[in-house]
Amino acid sequence: MTQAAAVTAALLVIGDEILSGRTQDQNIAYLAGYLTKIGIDMREARVVPDVTAEIVTAVNALRTRYDYLFTTGGIGPTHDDITADAVAEALGVEISEDPRAIKLLLERMKPEDLNAARRRMTRIPHGAELVKNRISTAPGFWIANVIVLAGVPAIMQAMLDDVAPKLATGTPMIVETISADSLPEGAYAAALGTLAAVNPELSIGSYPAFRDGGFHNEIVVRGKDKERVAAAVAAIKALLLGLVKARART
Image (cartoon, rainbow, N blue to C red):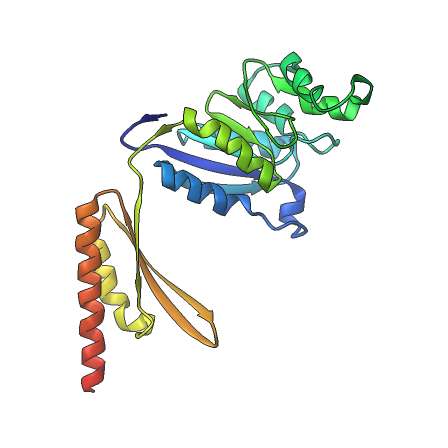
């Protein structure tokens, strides 16, 4: 793993089942958190259906915009698993059954069980590096800056563990959370906006939630400079304390 000043990534989630609501995606949150911890900023996530043209368009848009493009879904044995072919088309390379992938599948099954459907999982774009899958053996792949992973969360996570040591990374993001439960968002919104404006290198956001019968507010500060983050957190805490005291006097 090498380190650069800033490294960016996007995730392309592929699958009709996500867009129909039948399957709830778990991979966006996991990948975003994983990449943040190792110093890669995930800047965008898209969901597209199992349509080759849609996948090709999205792959070409995202892979040119970010340092890495991860994809999840569509590399199984069924007719609608078309990710590998779509990625090959997007990058303008041939695709065929890969002897390395066939060898991996034969570690878990007999040759007579490697039917046409299962052989679909051995179709790899030419020039790609295999991504290991310690759970079910069928690999993902990495070609150029496109990293193709399984859609099943446990398998995706195992594949991510395999590629992570090979990724270039940047300075990890520092994230600080401040409770603002004692105040409604409207009480501090304007002042928080002013603080955000004078700290453009930081991400400062307010996140309300409704739980346990009431609203709960949190302010989150994100940045890569420890001192700047600490200064912003201190300023926000002072702001909130001042507002609480002012409300108590009225």
